[in-house]
Length: 206
Image (cartoon, rainbow, N blue to C red; front, side, top):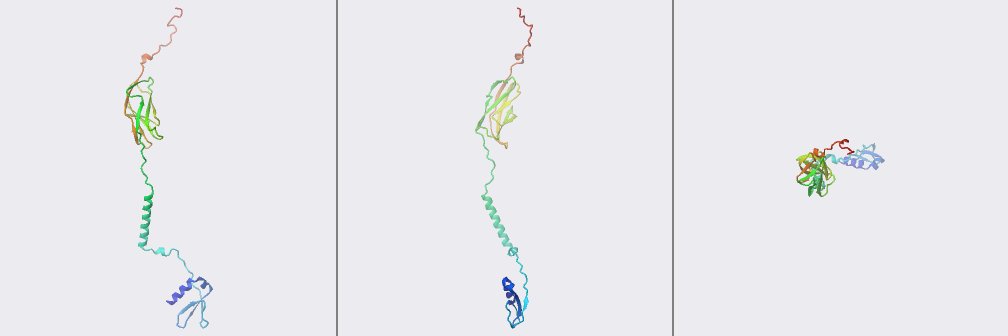
């Protein structure tokens, strides 16, 4: 046991080792190491082995309980951090308080020989950027615009049912108008017929 203690002491003092190490046998027959051997003994120069330093040596032999406790601690920290993060909620739906058709008016008869009719809306609040208006004519989707004005083209004479819906960019319904009726009236073809110019129809001398 004494030998190992002496070796440990010698190996831990590098400055002493560098000065010179000797080994000899004492009166009891034990091998002794040191840098100052007695003059009465025969000492032999001794070259100590090089030291090997292992970094994080203790961590290589962690017990299962230590690893489990550290993993549990990390899991708890992650849960705490996740709890403090803001939760991503669904995009808020900003609906419209009211949507109504102000032109054409309900049951209005519109004289449109070219078949073009303009539709105008009133919304509260005003139409927001990114929202769109879908126009339904006789229950079928006619067109989609991003303003409060839409145009209906090439309508034949007769009665029509008109309604609109407002949706956001995700296609979610924000509000819709009531359905109204209006009539398209056109002049008769016979009424609008113009006779070709005949220079001999009347005699300028009469």
